[in-house]
Length: 331
Image (cartoon, rainbow, N blue to C red):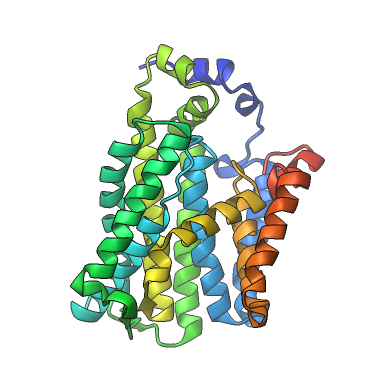
């Protein structure tokens, strides 16, 4: 196996120049982490906990998607399949099989990961628009499966999903209790993603994004690295979907529809591709807009389109990407 240092020096020189502090975070990222944790702690005392839980679920979904597109350069148009199936399996196991919430969420994540194994093995053989279209086609197959499968409830979905008790001890009926579980899951997955992208494995992923033929020439089996990234991204998306289904007590076709894949693309682009905090900010912007502009009905979609066009034209690197460029730091 080739030396990761050679990759760093050749394909991605900017990564080698990053100054990292505690836990692999740069000073700017560490400051961002402190702000994020502060918001997580103070947030439920200022804002509606259910709104915050929804935001955190979508933020995790966007972070999972960003792991694939931002650090490997693979644009998936089918991530709703993993998000939605994670929600369905978590809901079914919690309601019909009596699984505790942590087991239901793990089941949703594992199911999404297994689905990612199959979809990734097929999709990574192609690149660019062909990769995107294959992921979209596979996601549509999953959607029609969910329409017909008896355990999904068809168009009615799985309703009245119980939150249960954490480890069979701590009841999660109260929103505040559930919030701390969701916040813990989000923070743990966020730190995991950060560790992945700043590990030697993550360095190779970035080299594949920048110059795949060079990575191949240095001895790396790039398809294996891309497949593993796809599986990790799908698994974390499934965890996000599973958590969301327990928060709201319902799993529906909306979560597995192709439009959900479009939303996560929008969240990631608005926040900033290839940034650690970008997907979180992008999810916050989109979810907040959907929540507080809900009275406008279909106009919310129009406003989302305007924001997307504005970001593409004026903020090519996304909100966090532009902020990082302005401050000359990596966020």
